[in-house]
Image: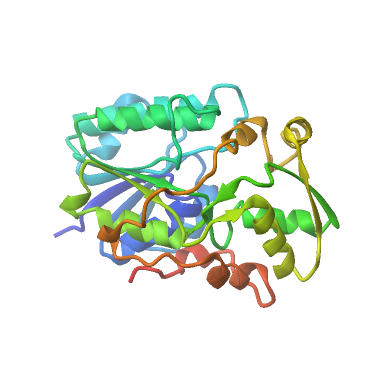
Length: 313
């Protein structure tokens, strides 16, 4: 008897790599569609994960991809638009096509990763498009569960890791939105919740904000990263006007550390207003217990660490 089949869109990314590894360990056959096979080569070493290079799927091909799957995970998301409208194309249009194909293929189970503070009336295109995507999921007729994680950290992240790189080159850090509050969550804890929800009927039709155990201002986070890097930095909080100028400049640089849309998202604190969902039986790891393993002395540098990071408990 063949293993149950699960399709994970976004399975090669920061969160997706942890999730597909966890699902494979649980005995599932995991299908990861990707535009570029070389972008997910770290998954090719795992025999129960099938990477499919699918640069341009039409609706019929998408339906065939989903036929026979017991579940679909949609983890695709972008923080930085390369072109105007990218957020809507990914978070709304692509998601809508996947939902329609899942209905036609009679998949049934849909697990979707949105964003904390997603809001149709939110200050940024990112938050508004995420809310539109959530509305599509809720009206899809599928057996859905939505996850709203705060900013995620862990080896290979584009949050603490980018600050660590930036701090190597400067002693003074002009910082937009320095007092915005975040409640970072360890990426492997999010992956655990996603895997455990799959066959737990209590999670059907539920939306789960996911946050770590502690709240920090952005200033405190950058200061902590500087301490881990072994140096002191002077952090200068910028007002709204200077912050907007900084975002406009950074938007043009490689890697897009900060964009104007990101800055608009940070008009709202990125924190949870509820306890961590007890249904997942997870005690979220603290930033201080994980960050030193990949930012401090003796940091993990293995590029395939994400495929071996075990947090399912």
